[in-house]
Image 1 (cartoon, chains in turn purple, blue):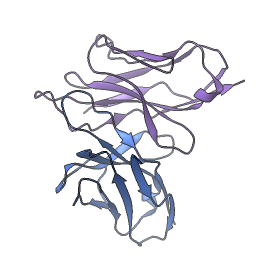
Image 2 (spheres, rainbow over the protein chains, first blue to last red):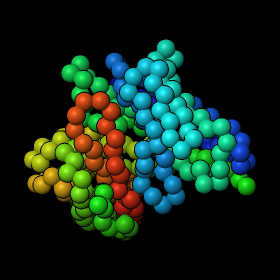
Image 3 (spheres, rainbow over the protein chains, first blue to last red):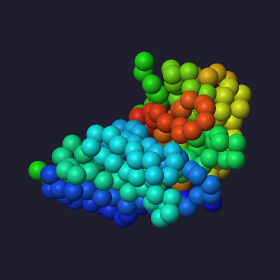
Image 4 (cartoon, rainbow over the protein chains, first blue to last red):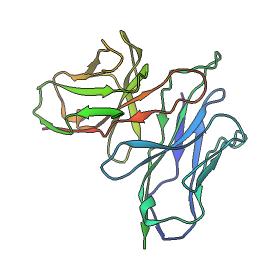
Length: 117
Length: 114
């Protein structure tokens, strides 16, 4: 079945450092890929998404590129802030031959990011 | 526009008790989902619904039941609660159509079974 693997955490960085969180996936066909963020005590929020190979999703300074050849969707940010401290989840939703899915998400285990001043 | 709301926020159950977790969305989304999040793990899909009257099992449905009588509401029922059901439960919804589905999540219900 489909699966998502994220780099193990937690990740601790100083403010303004460069961030990479690795994400690889296993899925049939052409899934849509997502990064969700969960701030302390809150539900998940969509951070960015990509629906086809070579698409780049971006939001709030974060970027991720859909790489079909390496089945990866790594999250990057050039300069992190204390307010970026959260749990980040990589996820996919399959797309069947009809081009639709029921939007069911398969999540990675999450990566805890802590940014210090 | 409140988005997805869940009640209660916290609950402690004794083994064998039952309860219903409530979920309501006001975005007129056809698709709704229930996930559980265990410590250090990603979210796992319990049940989902593609419209009123239509539900289906996800990855971890055992011990749970759902119903969908209206577009807005998607309650999750726990019968005979067990310690293994201690978790944080999230409800989500999304619109229909081809392509990527952005899911909107509620704030979660933290359930402890002792």
